[in-house]
Length: 412
Image (cartoon, rainbow, N blue to C red; front, side, top):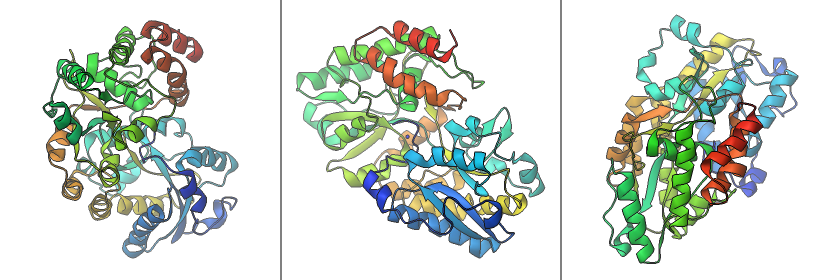
C-alpha cells in the first residue's frame, strides 16, 4: 500500500482510457436501485482491472440474482467523487472502502453487525486484522476483500552482488544497518526512503514501537518514540544507506523496479504485479525489528453498504458473495488481492510463486496490528509529506517535525 493506496499506483493514461459501465456519475441513487439491480462504486485502474471486477459482479448475478453495475473511477479521484455522491444523495448501494479511510465515511455507511448476525455470517472466517480494519468504534462497516502488512521487498540479485546474506523474517535493525554499510561499500544504495504514511508509520513502529495513531484510533503526534524513529530514518539517509525521501510516493517502488535501490517497503497487494515488472529475482521479508520486537502495521480494503441504499439486505447479500471464499480465491489467483478470508490465502501463495513469500508474509501477519483510520488521517499524510520529509532528509529533527505536525493538527 506507498501512501494510503492499497491498490498499486494508477497511471493517468490508464484512467483516461477507462470505460465505465452503466449509469453515469450524475445518476441518482434512487433511480438506479431495485431489489435485483444495484450500482457498486470501485476504484479501477484500466481495462484489465475493470474486467477482473466485472467477474466479481458476475458472481453476484449468478449466485444472488442481483445485477451489479460498476461505477468506476481512478483511485486519485475515487474518494473525492464518492464524497460528492454521498453528500448529493447519489451514492451507489455498494461502496468500496479502505480501512484507513473508513472513519471519514461512517456517517454515510450502514453498520453491518445486525445484518451479519441475521445471515449467520461466520466472521471468524476472515483474517482478524482485516476485519478489525473494517471497524470504527467497535462497529463493523465493511467486509474485507483484502488485507496485508507492510513488508520489505528486496532485490536478490543486488544482495548477491553486494555479498550480503538475504534478510530472513525476524531480522533486526542492527542487521539492516550492517547490510546498509555493506551495500554502501559496494557503491549501492540499499533502501528507498518514503514518507508515505502507512509505510513510514510501519517502519517507525517496527523500529521502536512509536506510533502517531493510537490503538483507539486517536492521533498523538507528540509521541516521543515516533520522533526518534524519524531521526533514525534520517540517520540512514545521512549514512548513505538510504535515498533521500521524495514527496512522490511512487518513487521508492520505481527506484526499486529500475534497480537503483536494493529494498523498499510495500504490501502484498503489490508483490505479484511487482514481480511481473522487475527484471531481477524478487524477494520479500519482514521489516527490521528494533527494541519492541518484530512488528508492522496492516491495512486493507472492503465493501460496505451506503445508508442511501433502499435495499440494504439485498446489498449485504451481494457483499457476502463479493467476499466469499470462491470470489476471493479467484482474485488471489489473479494476483489482485491478498485475501481477507484466511481460507483463500493459500491461492495467493501459489499464484505468487516467490520463494519464501509464504513464510515471510505469515511471520509479518503474526506480528501485525491494524493501522486504524482517523478523520484527520488524510491531513496527517499530507503533513508527513511536508514535515516528516524534512526530518528524513536531515533538514530538521524528528521532534521539530512532529511539533510542526501537532500544531497543524491542533493536537499540541
